[in-house]
Length: 130
Length: 112
Image (cartoon, rainbow over all chains, first blue to last red):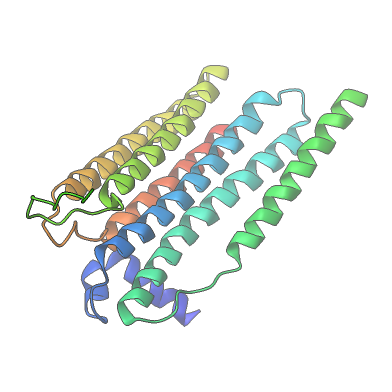
């Protein structure tokens, strides 16, 4: 928890990270930035999915529709916040010459997306049957 | 057949890293545009709610903010010296991520 607070402070303090270690090859920093942007796109896609569930499944009961949309939007928020946190941690690890941080977030996100997809299939099938 | 020696004195980046990063920013802006367009569709769907229009206006402002951020970063990437462009500042990245979070909040406001 203390570590998280320290990381959040780093998000907003660009000069603080320059005090640590040495500047890595700019190509590594740019690769890290592209990974960050890819995660941000994933977050935006989840948010777009939230909109789409609300827009394109009008026959669904309100509770189901709102629940699915909220789950996708929440996943998008988590994904965006985690993207910036992971990027900072990678940047710091590269400056200090440490191993890059490992994360179980990709596994968790895949499971959540799989569960939402299965829920959509069930909802559509039930919608056809009923 | 021998390969000609490179004449230009400046170092060439064989991985085209700044260009790839520029395109990554473009792709991300495009994703943001898609989300904003979906927000517009949500507003057109039920156009009588004032709260929805306010939320959509917020979405537009956030989209413009993201566009500006990407533009600033692309300019910085283009203007790198021989040591390559400067790394993304943490504050810049954080603001981009917070734009995304705020977009999700606006989306939640639009849906309810």
